[in-house]
Image 1 (cartoon, rainbow, N blue to C red):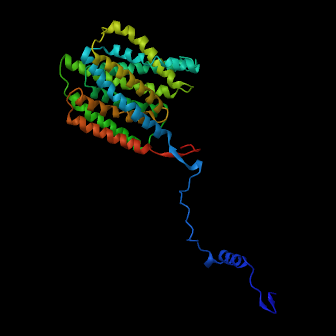
Image 2 (tube, rainbow, N blue to C red; image 1 turned 30 degrees about the vertical axis):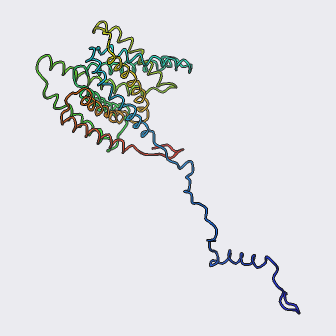
Image 3 (spheres, rainbow, N blue to C red; image 1 turned 135 degrees about the vertical axis):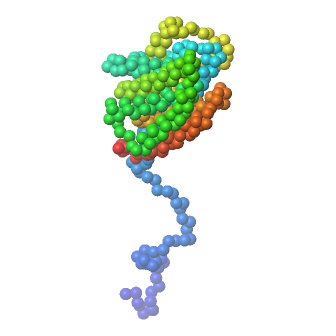
Length: 360
């Protein structure tokens, strides 16, 4: 059709480029990338929102227990012992000072319009939780006055771990994995390594009796702590955490003030060191209380108690470098076993779950 008497008709402008473009797009050999144009920067494909990973609840709970519960609590025992050595501050008076730091939480509850003692249906259990924590802290403060701070923390945390595992297994039917049991047994073994030589060399007479009584008080403090954590897991209402924190201060004051004048002699510290130690104990103990109460709602109470064994390592370090008390080689060996067990438990529970899905 394009032929005439003058010869072939020249192609119209733009037609040749269009034909070549069609050939390049239809033939596989012509479908090549244009290397003359700069390629756009490659960006990694973004995952959909339902496939992004976030730390699991158990992971968050254990990290909060380790960083906010165990490490600050490791300073409480040595500071309490320093206050006792400086001005012979009684344990109940130290407990009263700590409870005073919990009372301002009532302002937060009032601003939120929540009842100070919690809802009526759970008020009894909330008060029981506060009472168990007061008993645990009172036993711990009494123990650190007659035995080294590191050993008292060791016995208390070890007994709380074992009792938490047994109570949760019997009452809540919560099983643990093999790695978790390995970590629990390892941490318990480390605590036995730390305390064993000291228990085998108790002196006879009054000194040995007071030392044995200190270890018994530390054990009872751990038992009360495990019971308190178990009771706290059964509480489920809004503003549960600030309510139990305020109740701890209230119940502690009601029980400690009469006991101080009946069982002990009040002492008014007159040196800055004692007041500094009391203030540090109150603040660090409040932070540890809040973090442990949060962590136990996210992870197994036995695992939380096992991670809290980091308090023992911190207490041993302060016992050696600050209090200048002897740390035996068995203490160092046991602290290493405890740290290894904490690493096993934390690594086992360091997992992530996809957003929008519930971890099994």
